[in-house]
Length: 452
Image 1 (cartoon, rainbow, N blue to C red):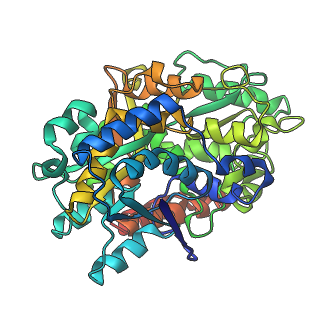
Image 2: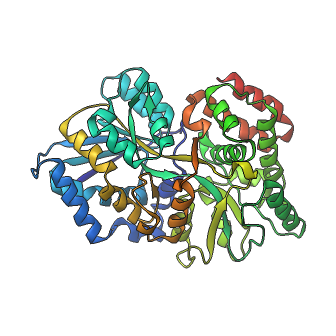
């Protein structure tokens, strides 16, 4: 069986999946009571179980794999369903601990000499930090570099590597896009520039109809949603060199192109005509409610910039909303020369121990069979290129897969995936300050630089 433990703390010091936060918030709601029993396609379950059996030579070797991660609620139910064939075939128990304070808990356990077998990290920085400390195992050697490089985009492999060794494997994957209510959004949809998109928003605001959905209260991590917003804007409007420079320190947070991204965001967040209730309401309303205004009666807003998971979470809240027919998305608007760049995030499994159980579980995670099973849950795109758009039953995820992993797309990690926690904290804190005080931008950008 899959064991679940949760740890609750008062702060969230690293960039977590927004999908986890939403799932945890909704888990107590009657809206998703039915999600506790997740049913995945039996043919895929059978295929995954058959593959898992081969990993241990048809033997149930028993033992367990302990995992520290960020998932909970409905999302963890889905992952547990995808891991069940592995357990059934191998007799290995998956012992999962979910926490909203992942980085701090992981650090404490590593320092105490009690790391988990695996860590499901949503931040590349954790990989870099613990690999440099010599705490991580060479996953490439455990699973096989050829198997990893043959299934995953070169950008993903590079992000999980240090000094020629692969220290992590990707499972769920997401990026950030503009989601919209098909019935209220009447702006440009075919690769518009930001200027064209903003012109629509201004026109709608002047007509008395609030265009943007934006809420960003998350306690210590308030501002994280806007952080994704700003980084996606930078990539699409200034290119990958600027975004990578923010990650490696070669570009200052006070650079003109970075300041321009904050100002583009501020044009939205500061204006009550642009976001429901204006900046005070945005920073006092839980981030988990960011997309609910799309389908209020009447709708409060028409567009939001959010992750891939927004589609399934919105249809979970509003079961009558149909993907594509009612809810759709487009890439973040920007300059034509940057259309092939996409930011990405996701779950990266790091190994602190090398045991037969850990090796078998990692091999299972990267397999076509397991990745197709996760994709069938209808909540995520997955990292393996072997999982084709046709393998997704959810039409929104099918399109998301086509956008994120199609030939010619260059995946670029967000700075908040790479930089140290103090910089992330300074960014989030600075965003909150800027939203509430538009005149503070210069000092905010300087404070983020100072945190490096």
